[in-house]
Length: 407
Image 1 (cartoon, rainbow, N blue to C red):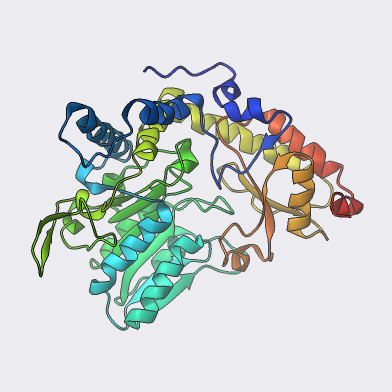
Image 2: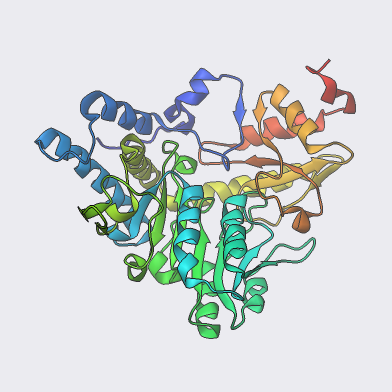
């Protein structure tokens, strides 16, 4: 079915019809779903709804073809080969798969570089690895200064074995040039594994894994208009036979004896068990929708929104705007003297959905010098009116407002 983009793009997203008067500004947590994507999920369950491991009929085999088609769309989006695209339950599982898979190649005394801006999904797997292997976690960045490509590059030495970083961070929205980091790392130490957490990047921009020369890339579907519970690992071809899976069972093996078994080839090797077929199909539909909308159009729209946010936020008294320099419309802020959770709850009572705290980037306080912030994150269906609603609520805030709906 051909994608049709409505002139008023909000009308493509039924959430707005069902939640009149609400303003959705939590897109870094999860995006809303267009009707086109919802229809793909409903269509799957109504017409197909079979296990792709059953290829004994043309109907059930078609489900396997649908999954393969979505895999191909995702591979094309990031310029990978289909066998390098591995479906998981989300970016969290994807990063755990990589850390677990690299464990046999990590030795005592090796170093793993991450930044203060990472989501815990890109911190805890590496912390666990350091505990089990006796290696060192090197967290880079300076107080009150976002990490840069040079911050990471300066930390590389002969002991460096892994560099794992988000190329767009979920709390502050700063961007790192993956290609620049990879090129410098290869020149300094050819034995480094480079992992990019593109969970926040993939909804906003196309990424070329060949040009960036990444070893691994992870992302989730639900942040780019697809269903929940589905994610991806891009794994460079040369690692597919070396890395072990973390899901053992049906579909990921070839031959099984009483004492041993052999792995299937990738991607089946890493996708044991029945897949989240509807989620995978929805991801293909979401890619169709975003392609039809246009990636250049999306970039221009988001740049316009960020410029407008910066202009309007400058008019708000007592606003501590943390990241005006960020390129993407992921904004972090506080009102002086007010706890971020209180402010987020106040906005929630005004029917504005934002996020209070550190949004799982639990070391980011080293960068922003704040224990917590309010995050508002925008996407393709947000517009200047949404910014105006947020700004009006922030301008009208009074200290007593934080106890409304509490007592």
